[in-house]
Amino acid sequence: MLPPPDSTLGVMMARFPRAGRVDWIGVRPAREVPMRALDTAIAAPRTGLDGDRYSGGSGKRSVTLIQAEHLPVIAALAGLPAVMPAQLRRNVVVSGLPLLALKGRRFRLGGALLEGTGPCDPCSKMEIALGDGGYNAMRGHGGLCARVLEGGTFRVGDAVVALDDIGSQ
Image (cartoon, rainbow, N blue to C red; front, side, top):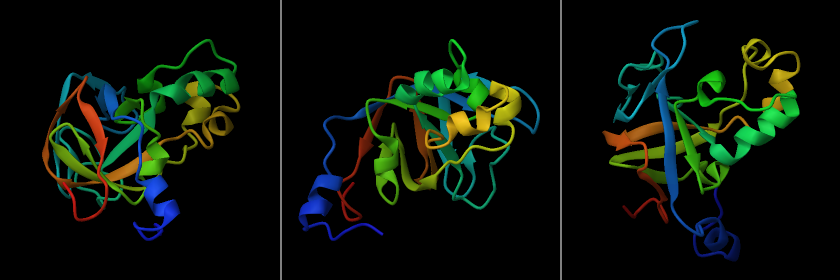
């Protein structure tokens, strides 16, 4: 639960130094197949990203996002020289904005309106993708799950903009 928007903590939690940026987009066409990188994605309410296997699910995990700044941390913790976004099986890599601060908040991803629903915890597949200890390397760095509130298109390079409160767009 978020603090009241007019409280000191609420004001600080709604303040971001700048907009973020979409650095990478990918969809998981099916279970156990490689991610497909995209330049442009279409997000739709209740179904998520066009072409993603989670399309049509519960909606709380319609889009998964991970912070670009965490990729080198995950690599270091996994003992790898680097990790690629597709290895982590998240839909969108975002830079310049603290994703976990978007939990419970609405934000614009290009032309789509999303709401952060909670952390995107790692799954056991990270042991295969990153090697032994891969699951633990991702703990606390797995990103954010979001639901699509208003459909739209977004592209690599588009802004990621946190909205002030429920009443603003």
